[in-house]
Image (cartoon, rainbow, N blue to C red; front, side, top):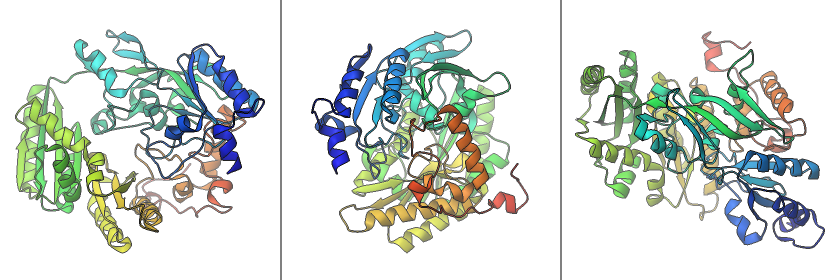
Length: 494
């Protein structure tokens, strides 16, 4: 507790917290530095509230130069630092290091340039995702990656986690849309990374979860708004039936903009919360969106309706207008928050399985739910097999939080065993760092660590995230097992 008390509230002249905070306050374009206990409380975690840290202080730079100066000050003091946007992340990637500096990038929220001719935009990392689409809408453009938290999450956070969203099935994850980055490295140097040349350094940076540096400018691709959009809702008796139809749609050569699934628990919670018009008695629903040239959309929409009906859908409904389409999407995107009506606490997991393994993986989750005596709601990006199980628990009941974490870990294990991966878009962070050896060999992890140390030799930039260490995970992390795709001869390591 001594470290926590000093880091958060000691104001005695000459202590490291005071000296460093005062130095940060003297940096031009650092508009605020917080270092009092009451001020820091809100910054102890990101969206993963089970993991917390006590930062020494929180600094708010507004320019690349200011952020570079903050990082140099941390280096001079030998203090680790963690970048943060708006704290919506769900894997603990922005959890502060106790005794370290939290660099809050939310004030770096400007659009620096929009180039409509080349369909690019240059933005600061604190720009809210949805605000970029709003800015380019009058030009007939939009920014495609759309995490469910897009009304709050930032472009910088999306870059750090390689975020996706409902429409990444057709349009790809954040990495697909990032063209160039201005990055402050761990020693404070600012460098430009692009996608050209022998090494795709910008590609390596996207998804590195803040461990290679901090992006201060991001050049992204913006795309034309489609000529026509159709959104349809199909209701099924079970997630099994809905999952089979997902495979049938993709197997028919149709690539929708989005295919989302909700089970009965999440349908009822979302409907109670926002009254989106979801069928409360359905065992599962699919929300399928098709976009593109008008003639193509008309034909594929008809084909998807036929596939849903053939797959046993009790109801297939096409949104009549923009208002109904918006209501359906509101119901889907409100699902996470709506679970607060069902349970006092919940744990959001994020894993990926092949589309063809959706039915059996969902059955396995149901078995684990019964085994642990905890309910699990499922709402996820079915089109690319990106599951988001919501493990419901009550932290006030002794042992339930620990059981929820254990259940969530077993769900991840089931995803890997089904031929999938540990994360689709939420990242590894601190939440899944000790699970990395389930999927990656010692040599794999060593290669990742060499890349990390090339960018950050002293390990000051967001330490304790992404890669397991003995300190974090015990002297012997979980054993590596050959991935199912390797066992089946479909893939190999090199």
